[in-house]
Length: 325
Image 1 (tube, rainbow, N blue to C red):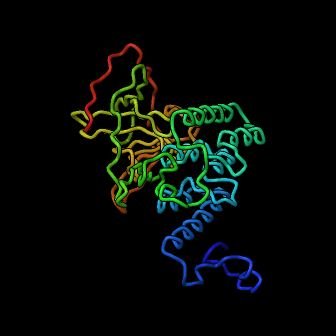
Image 2 (image 1 turned 60 degrees about the horizontal axis):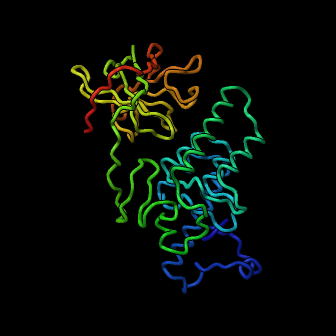
Image 3 (image 1 turned 90 degrees about the vertical axis):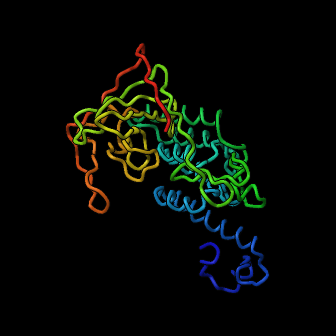
């Protein structure tokens, strides 16, 4: 056990290892550094055990520690996700939690190096898995070139930059909140969600939703310039019948999802995280969209066996005029 949870009280252990919390001389700053380090050790142990849902929930409490790697550890969170070839979690860590795609391991390897070595050790079983691995490699290469912070790891919190998250590629005091994608302004309060680019992508694709049990979800969803976790985002404009606009986007927990907002806790409908590739119009045999009915504690999802999503390339078609709200 690390830190205050240490249960070893033998004299040789207490003499050989520092236990500053047992002393009265520890400053407030030192206490915070120590507790941050204990938190990161537990977080990395959880990631090592592939319990990523728990990692996400824990990291929401201290999102600024996403890139911290204690000096005695080889991997940070991004390296564990790459080593385990967790496609969705690698994308979530970089795009939503603010993980640095250039962060080095203790022995000087990048996340790309760790991912390539893992894929050599555990090659894909079939063509679909091979394509999924290939897409992840290309996505990570692109993110490494276009985003992320410095190429060195944050080994220990020894400066304000290390604590606030600027070493992860953000300005001093900024920290990306993994659940919502909102950025804290340094006051401890989350800022408003970044404005979504609601312009349609030229030459993009329209996803036509039909035969849904909830008629307001039916209609054309236009591909936007905005992407999320490397996947396209589609928007359905309000109509005389359905006055709300809806987004079709990818989420780690539910796969392809239709919701009113990008960070809605529950979607109006979802397909599931095991969809084939990055195309919401494709699904495994036997997979069905689940549609939300009811409200509050009485809400539930029902299989919609007739609901369909059809991809339609928009080349040559006039683009609609979208107005951001």
